[in-house]
Length: 186
Image (cartoon, rainbow, N blue to C red; front, side, top):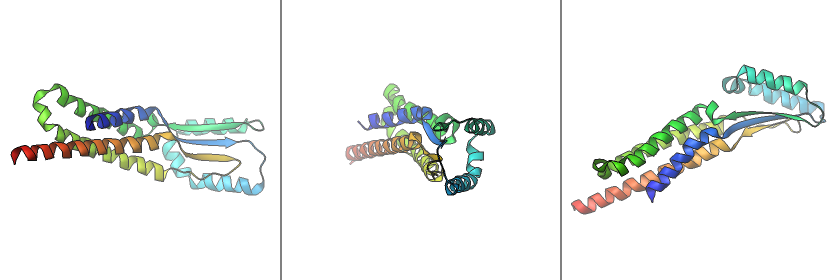
């Protein structure tokens, strides 16, 4: 049962690379001067983050599209998991965890030592969990209604939950195996 929890969490980590992590939408709506000032202030405050996470070509294209907007239209900019370090680390660590869960099922000498692989999986998942928290807490989320909306999308939340599932499953498996080993030696 705990292996299935690990396997499910690891599979979700692998697939989370293909989810949106963050998005920003700019609307062409009626606005007043104070709303424009809020928009400019928020954009200026987040310029360093935008530079670090969004390519200049994507930003230029979004700016060009914004200039060509008709009344009531919008332009969206999305960062996907395959464009982030968190997405790639989750992908690779998820693959490692899947192999660590499946390997003892097919290699007989490793069956008694699967608790070690479970603890490694818990450690890797803890790193991914921390990275997802850094993403969730570090990405800009301030809005300037009705001109701009920005914030986290589904990806970092899914990574957080999948990592927590792997940590739970791996820790419970390791504890169960260690208790049964202690009971047989006592």
